[in-house]
Length: 281
Ligand code: PAF
Image (cartoon, rainbow, N blue to C red; front, side):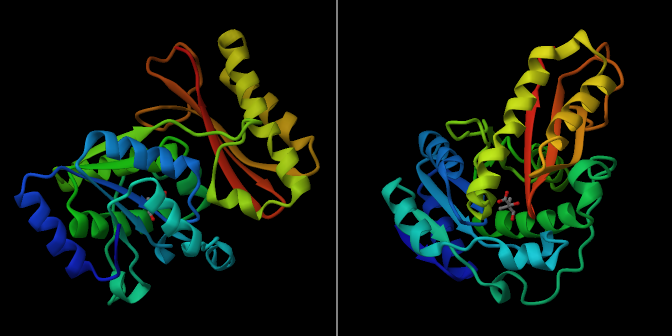
């Protein structure tokens, strides 16, 4: 496995591999790798000749300085893990390499970023678009892999790739969960043992909501989910929305066409967790 720190070097290397006809799969990450990331690496390895992973904690997508400072950084364990899983190349740039100048670009996603993460984390998706476009320009992969846990990110990135007309296929991979159902996340290691135990109520409640399904209105289901989680003194719901999987706009009735996804953000102490569940149509 080769580790690159400079964009020009990895770009030249990949350009020559592409000339040999190799298919390039790309898994962008912010490190602190877990089995969710590894499932993306496995999917890429199955579909491509070469798998490239990037590890970069992107400052422009954090609207909260403390969250950025506390974001876990575990490069010493990330690199051996990627080597063991058969990753071919890792790109580990520093901030100057990615942002030699401040990035002043402003992206537009219509209504996709006016709700949920976009509403509660202003500028978050603009920062993601800044870093993802830079990474796609550097790596120029045939396919890029994203987890379904960050559902809104996935939809926004699909639009970004379409709008920019990048010849890249976006592949989404299912959420990977711990034994008690908690969605794997780099942030989970910041939970205290007590918070970690209580966080399992989030997927449990989502699953119960899916089972309840259309027997109650979306509004009542929203309230039931929020109340159940907020009753736990370790947890505080920031939002729970039931949205259309294409427009991300909240649905008022189960009769509306299209697939519905329940998306949630919850604070466990000061750790912010997100998760989602797809309802049967
Ligand atoms: O999902 C993530 O880890 C990040 O948002 C991404 C896509 C690597 C951009 O920094």
